[in-house]
Structures are given as structure tokens and as C-alpha cells.
Amino acid sequence: MRSQRSRVRVGKRGVIVIPKGIRERLGISEGTMLELSVEGDKLVLRSRDLWGELRERSRRLKVDLDKAERELDEAEKLWIKRLKERL
Image: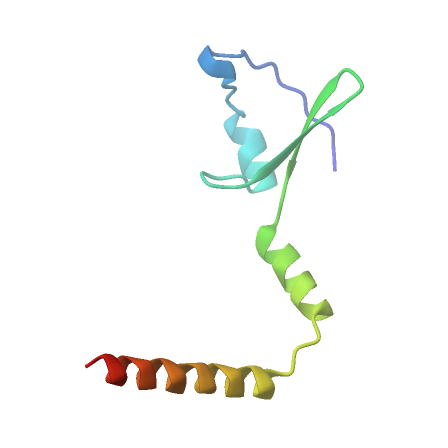
């Protein structure tokens, strides 16, 4: 990936605007989560693919879906029983 530099001005409350070309190149849009870090005398912003991170984490989970579904069914039955007792 080629390097691209831009100058930006820090506005009120520390707000900076990422130039449109850079936003488009990196797929950054309103609501995109960015990770901010300080490395020496540099301010570094990295875009984060939260859905990708969640998918990767879910691959590492070891869950018995049948057991989880049974537990949810039991919890629902108990909730309905308690609700009927109150009526």
C-alpha cells in the first residue's frame, strides 16, 4: 500500500477531519471504529473490522449449541411458569 500524507488542523475539542480520499481508500465511514495509539512522538489511527474480529473470536469458541438451546428452553418454561403463578 502506498504512503499518503495529509495535513489536518486540530479543531475545537480536539476534533480532526480525515480527508475524504483517505477515508475512501481505507473504507472509513461514519460510525467506523478507529483505534488510537501513541507510538513515540506519533499519533497512530488504525481502522478496526469489528465484525471480522467477532467472527474470528467465534471460531475459537467451543459451544454445544444443542445444550445451549435446551438451557434456553428450560429457562423459558420456568419464566412462563412464574408468570402464570403471578396471574
